[in-house]
Image (cartoon, rainbow, N blue to C red; front, side, top):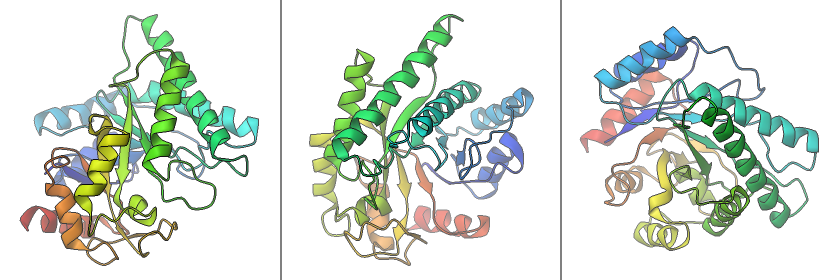
Length: 289
């Protein structure tokens, strides 16, 4: 099982790899910058090299970087949309130092403009960010090594991406605006708490949910799973994560997610309300049962 948890950058990039090893993980997640602000510390290239050495020596699978919560690509405020675009471009530049990373982001809240406008604005940012990064790297004879992931959302407030159909519309619109297929460049990160809160019954109908995702979005476009229990009942649209086995989804259902033939080789990232010792227990529990 490829599993890790969302770690703090307090001990630097190398610290992410060391902590993963300490809890028995072979991947990890981290915020690219202050999650509720936007400030990012300068990348220490030697620190990045030490992390990459740990990844290689221990056969880690792709880490999952997470954009800050302040990134809202479909805000009604043009200044905030530009802020989101600038952050995403800068994050791509920084993640080039951690090759093979996945980079997930929340597709945003349309803030009263409507779903169609939200999807249009978010897909515009995706295409703009990828074009800018590609042009910069082409000038240096390099290619982007990071895959951008649209995260499935719970549907609280005016969030977009709360259904597989909305995620697909964002994906297709981004490809159209980019002017080419983005297969292998743009994908999806599925959050179990979010889709449960969004109304997808992974407890009783996991096979059907996966089949629906495949028909609408395509399993080839699914790159990572945020593995979380939920404090809420099915379809609550609230997005409140719970520890594995202590919520409405439950351990057995989440375990089935991790061993499902269509999902089992993906990186699973725990975002449960835990400290490192709690994550270690959850990893052991999920691997041993």
